[in-house]
Length: 408
Image (cartoon, rainbow, N blue to C red):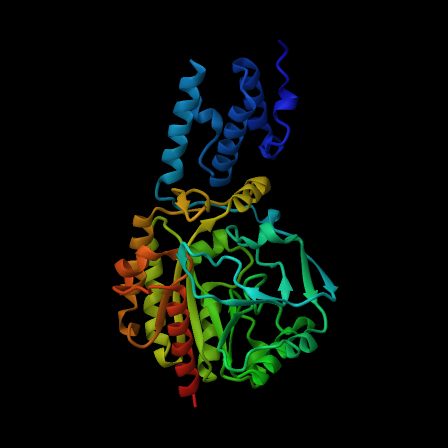
């Protein structure tokens, strides 16, 4: 029977492999008459090794019995994938970042519950506003890339009119975020985004409006008065992670300096350590950030600190492999996490405990929480837990409102 290699590699990522890897795998496919599933697995392994800069498939291949070869390759791959990764001497290929373009579309305002809410994880029941769709920062782990065309940034038009026409219950407190479909500040006031949000927050004092960012673009907020129910929050990681996995974002120092300017304007800020990443020197490098926060910021003007880590849906993993750029983000032990893939709970517990204990002086002054994490981690990390998402949500909202009121 003729071995039809060309047909077997259809619907795989074979052509995303470097040329030498394609030639090696093609030769082995003919020699061992590899099946579609076997080829698919080997292609994904080869792409991962290349992305992580951890050698090549041929380095793991020792000729012999086919079953034994495949078993040993998977075992070696799992060892590489699950080890404590190092970013030392790891270089990214910056030419593979996105070349973005912009478009304006008049469409219905995206307003609804957070799309990642799940009964299997403790969730704050955040509402989300999609002011802009897609992001220009190109973080390797970002789920936005699987929802939108990452090469096109879409601005909704007539934002102020649409926001001010939203019908909200005056007797309810709303916590609304704008950082789920794009970064909240990287675009500044382009398309009238920030102007519209400020008017919306002024009209609705029962709204806690959160602007989440990895940018240092606070110029518009510094130059314009805005109500205290707007909270600006920064996602933080050590500089080694920012350089290698959060390409195109502002540096750690620039983010913290921007946060300090808003803090000194007597407005609330917050910090998201989400995702925390497990890698060589993680304790030292995260510890330096925690020390700086304690030194530079008044906890009375800190609304929250959130903790969370890498959680992948399969389309994001597929998209990462399709791009096949240099990134170690998938070089991690992956286990099932409420239908997604994430670190084992014992690694999460180490990461989160270290963060929480490092910020001990803030424990009774700042609201700490975990985002999209298993219920069981709360008691182990914080020493307390919420029985329901609703009780968590209410505690969060009243903590924020108290801080807003005390700004004076």
